[in-house]
Image (cartoon, rainbow, N blue to C red):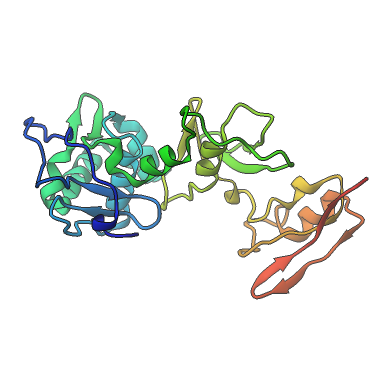
Length: 259
């Protein structure tokens, strides 16, 4: 991720809990979650926390800048099915404040949860989302061709396929499909939390049912079960021809819709 000198200037409305602006002549804070979690102080110093859960906590709060994230949600996102208590979350928050140094006061305790007291313009994913919007504020549309994005409901485990005929915009569908557990927090859409569809299968090739020939690019072809393995999924498509070839570590199978 590029340094703050190459980035955007954050508005001067970000304040510490005391109300004193964090201002050093223009640069405030910048937090990056598109890629490795990163954080810079107003002076440009790198204060990114070390540790998987510390980075996960910062990135989860950064997904909702200025808004309270309830404690139960944070525990679910950071510990999953592993037992954890409110005390464990409090201890993690304290560690994150210490790790962030001058940015520590931006982690604010609120009734029932915590928030990151930063403006959206300080968070790279918020800036990225705004750049994807048109002049009228609308998001980029889905492509006209058949294009499907997969995700898994983090709570029920149900498999979900987003496409242009649904109610979910392209930006949030892509975000949900990139929410790899322990790397990126689950993405909330209409009250449901979604994670990467690759948790079901690295290819989800069975979505090509109805095609004569299928081309699948699976950099990580191994599945967690035989049922969701690439050969089994290809068999279930009923395709007239499938090919499971390797090229540069990738498995390739061609896709053509029946006419």
